[in-house]
Amino acid sequence: MFVLKARYEILETDNELLQESLERVKKSRDQQYDLYEKQIAELTAKLQQLYSTELEECDFEFDFKSADAFSIERINNSGKNKTIIGYRKTDEGTIGEWWFDCSFAQHQKLAEQFRRYSKK
Image 1 (cartoon, rainbow, N blue to C red):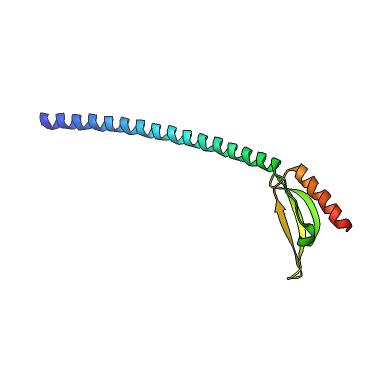
Image 2 (cartoon, rainbow, N blue to C red):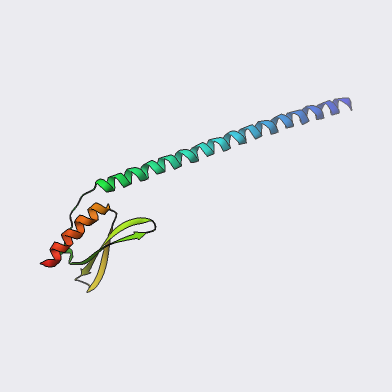
């Protein structure tokens, strides 16, 4: 009986040690997960900043005549400013829209280009 009790106590101690070890592993895992989440958030913010900077520096022209464009406007869509150019789909007899992510300055350039096109 004494041997069984001793073995039981050893198993109970082993079980407690394993439980403590498991809790340490879980805590370490949770800390690592939190660290990864933080790093992902930081990298996402950096990527968004780079994307925004690239858009601010982006410059392009648009062939309004070839596109048969009839309008240009600036809207806020889900917190992001967009430039929309309306055009006629001559083959289908319908209209369509092109949506652009561009800076306000680039939108102003496109709007001026559209005004020159519209006067012709």
